[in-house]
Image 1: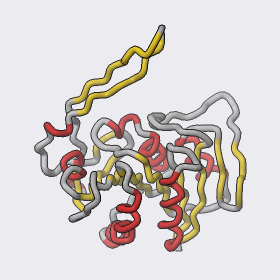
Image 2 (image 1 turned 135 degrees about the horizontal axis):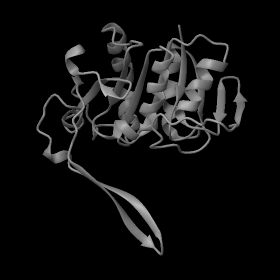
Image 3 (image 1 turned 120 degrees about the vertical axis):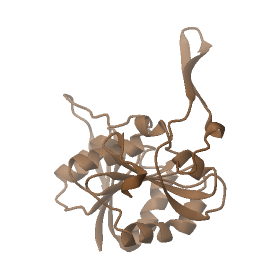
Length: 231
């Protein structure tokens, strides 16, 4: 049985992390160290130079007033547990293309790599039932194909919609997108992004896969695309 460190960037009370804990529990002990509040788009940000609050809420549940990367550092560095794997998610929203640069879900896994612990991130658009239905097949695929490594993380995205046809190995597709700020009122602006997924014709990419009923598995080494050819 595995010792599994579980975190996310949507906060400890998010539906996705609760679902994922239930799915992982059959494979071993699941210890959650997760942010107190939503920490989306924090990437691998760490709190340095000032204290953060970490509260033990239950036997295997710790809540941190910090980032996903902080949570991983605390779990791997301060708990007296030898973890076999770090898992991040289920993120409510895909982490494909440039999302991987900003994602706190992905950032948690990149932090795990600095401790040389195998890790994967799991994301879906909004359909947690789809993840529940296919998770065992996915996890057994990962184990049987020996995809876990301390040299790279696995960035896994479930397809948009309610169907999974297959699991595919992909690379990151750097789509054309535009980031801008929209004025709300006064001096207040809100960040916006215009995405152009429909322009992607690369059938071996993560963007294409999630739009064509496929679970996408991409390897990422730190912040670099590890490359499909290495799968």
